[in-house]
Amino acid sequence: MTDSGPHPNHKPGFFTQFLGNTRDRLASKIINFCMLIIILMLIAFFSLMIIGKAAANFENIKDIFTMILPVIGTWVGTVIACYFSRDNFQTASEQTRALAQLNTPTGNVNTPAIHVMQLLSDKDVKRYVLEKDNGLATFRSKKLKTDILDVYLHDPRINRLPVQDANKRMIYVIHQSFITNFIVSQNANAELTVGDLLDSDKDNILTRFATVGIEDKLMEVKTRMDKDPCCQDVFITHDGSRDAPAIGWITNIRLEEYVTVK
Image 1 (cartoon, rainbow, N blue to C red):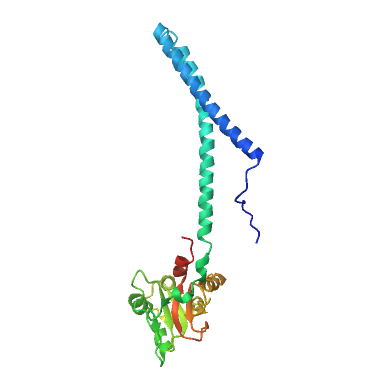
Image 2: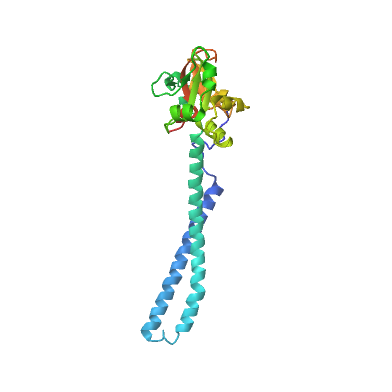
């Protein structure tokens, strides 16, 4: 891979150094010259006051100050603006590089997924497991508001519900926002059921999760999510297939916490 960045031992060319030095010297001379003019004008003004001619020539002195001071202010302001804008540009460039690095995966993508996953059997994980007999029919009959939102997704920290069949295989991931948006689109009908939600999912959003194996690393998890913009959940199974029971879970938020430059 070719490195397009500057080499550590690279030195600026003579022309670049010359321009930089010339700019610095010119700016210093302009500021010193302006300060000298102001000092000379003040000396002249106080000298006139001492000899008693300041009052008689007040209008002339005022006109001189009025003409010269704006010019001096413009020179000094231009120099200051030049240097501050250059510093701001350098700062912005550094911040941009830092932000770019934040989005760049590093060595921690080689961490095994099972070291990062959240166990689905964890007591803090809210999930719905279908019953063996008529489990899907029962689940479809659940009311979205009273049986799902109020029971499984009432905690502000929980915003999605994994759904498994009786053999613990993943079949759906229902995000809270998907439910609320659907309810709003149906005029907040309190009688809406899970079946209504599933039937409205024409793009199969609820089943667009991914699976990886227990030996896969976070890079594979990230790759699966990057392939599908709608995929925000990856489940870990023994063989990496959907047909195997899911034992762990990595959300897009959890992945982002680990695949980041600190």
